[in-house]
Length: 119
Image (tube, rainbow, N blue to C red; front, side, top):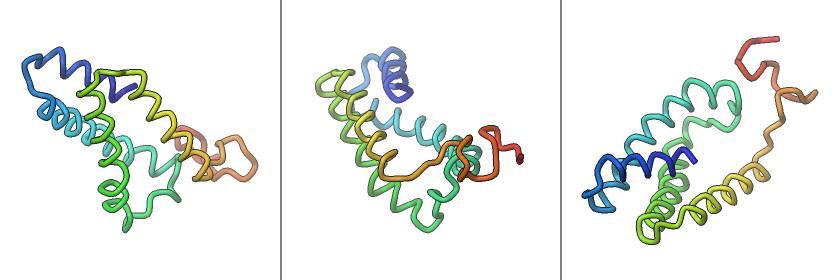
């Protein structure tokens, strides 16, 4: 929903931009926000085992960026928000099944709370 909202904001702020320019703008803004989110919170407190520094560039270039490019190209071409959100739901659900994320309240969860405070 964040990506879709960002797409709509860029479309409102720059209605005359071609689709490729809007895609680039969304990716640049999203990259800045996501990198801060991951370095400051996600990779430290939620899924530190998922953050293997040596694989970060390969993961971004081989999985995240191609998916985002295809999804944004589909959105630009067809302007179909439901399919865009649905593709993200499927991708995130598959990731959640493939990667084990114990909730913070589970007995085998890492020793931290959702806010990063040691218990």
